[in-house]
Each structure stands twice: as C-alpha cells, then as structure tokens.
Amino acid sequence: FRGAEISCPRCRLRRWYEVDRIGHAWRCDGCQEEQPVPLSLSSTGWKYRINELYARGYDQGTVTPLLVLYRMHQIWGTSFARAGLAYYPGIEYEAEPGASVPVERGEVDLVALLRGKLILVECKESGEPFAEPNKARKFSEQLRDLALLAEHLEASRIVVATATGFPEDKAPLLELVPTAWAERIEWWDGEELLDPDRCYAFTTCWGRRATLQ
Image (tube, rainbow, N blue to C red; front, side, top):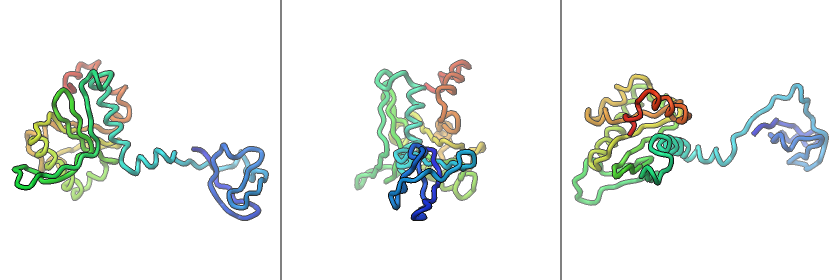
C-alpha cells in the first residue's frame, strides 16, 4: 500500500497514512481533527506498507510452500486431481517407542503425494545464508536426516526450495547427504519458483519435461 507520513499541525502526532485517506482534507488519528492535507504532491516522499494478510503469512513461513505447490501444479498437470497430486503442509513426525527407524523425530515443511510416491519438501525463506560454511554444514545435517527419512519411506525425491537463490556450489550443502540421495534432490529457487509459467514453457520447449515427471 502506498502512503506517506504526516505530522499533525494540531496535536503533533506523526503517523503513516494510506494514500486513499489523503484527499482535499484528512482526519488525524490522534486528535480526530479534519484538516487540509499538509503535503506537497510534488515533493512528498511516498512510503509503502505490505498488506497485513501477506505479512502474517510471510512471518508464518507460508509463502515458499505456496510457491512450491503452484510450481508442482504447473509441472505435473492442469489440476491436482488429474495429476494425482496431494499435499500435507507442516508435518511433524516422531518414532514410536522401540521402532527401528533412521531418524527419531523431525519436521517436514511439505509432503506431497504424486502417483503413489511421496515427495519431501524443505522450504527456506532465503538460501543466501548457506554460503557461510557453518550454516552450510548445519543445513547439510538437516538434508542428511531428510534423505534418511526419504529412504525409509521410499519417497521418489526431495525438493529444496527458496524464492531467493542457493549457492551455485552445492557440494558443501550435500557433504553429509548419502550419495544416492544427493542425486535425487531437486533445487527450486529464484525465477524457477517465482515465475514457473515461464520456466516451465522453457523446459518443455527444450525437451526436458521428462526429467520433471
């Protein structure tokens, strides 16, 4: 939303107001006086605010999973039903007492089911911090556990996604991941996630669609 900060000449309350509330007259949120707008349209520095609903969703980590679901929709069919795609966001798992499992507990951001096979998805708000060795190592531990879980559940693949970008060199991120699973991890980031319509058309034209099936 576009707006500007206005300081009330009467009560001195300074606050941001949305542009739709600024006309020939404007009402101060503090003293409630209706006054002429103390702004010059030619010199006003506009400031912007994110929609509150979007901001809450972003804080709760829902944006990247939604982008992943949209890209899955683009890749695997014109409708979830026709493609046989189901999904379950925010799965927490814990082993039963005495169970023989490779990972006892953890969380998966998104679990998808495509034609009877599971897809485990790890979503990150940003992949840029993983350029640092310590954070890359910690992420590699997380991917290792996810790969062990994927093997136990006989999943078809792992998808790692971010709307920014992962480091070009994936070796530090895959250091602890079993070799067989390192090759079954798909990295969805940047434009590929933000503009899947364009990227899907490109991969289809170049005959790479089979690699995504």
